[in-house]
Amino acid sequence: MATTIGEATSRVRNVLKAVKEDAFITDRFLYSLIQKYSKLLIRRQEVADKLMQFHNLFETLPCVDLIEVDRIEACCIGIKTGCTFRRTKDKLPAFLENARGPVIRDVTTVDGSQSLEPTYPMLYTNMTKTSGWKYNKKKYYWYQDGYIYIPDVEWESIRIEAIFDEDVSSFNCSTDVTDCRPQQEREMGIPDFLFAEIEQMALKEILTTGQIPSDGADDSQNALR
Image (cartoon, rainbow, N blue to C red; front, side, top):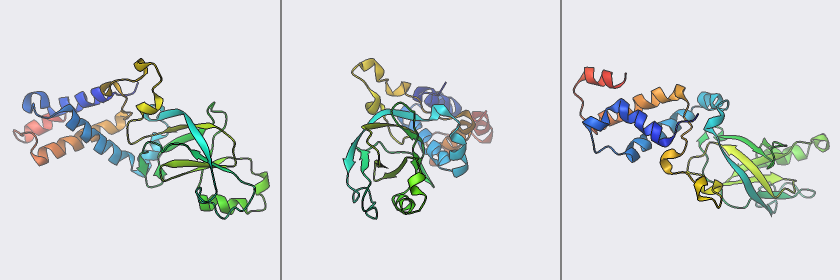
């Protein structure tokens, strides 16, 4: 089960002994440190690759509407004929990014029956000019300026599974208000193998910036236990 924001904040607070030693450290401040260092660690390429196996880290936008656009907006001006383009109707919430770009696990049809391959406009344009292109049955997408573009489909919507850099609850809330959980109950999606390092980084920053007093080396060591 994924760690919630409330649980993650309490975990760091216990490590820092902030409840007794520094009452002015708020949950908001601790949460900002957790976000800061979790993003830093996830952006490391070897960590990002490893995270693909952790399903609970990824959030899903189950039904994102598409609209038709021209090849100029899709940055495929090199394709002259025989191709239509669609993009997400609204700008997507920000993705967490690493050296390769946004950390997107999968883009599929709404029912999940067909996955799309990530690519780039220029690469896609070049592929369409190869002799074997007519035998290629794969569907492709690319991410650009906050939108996902998909060539040569007639779909009305898609499903996106990714690690986002902002709250996506407004994209998933139905008319039933019980579907929208309080902020503290939202899942952080931080695996245990990263949390120990996040705790140490947060503690180091707080002690370095003087946010909480330190009674010496022994106390600092105990706080990490």
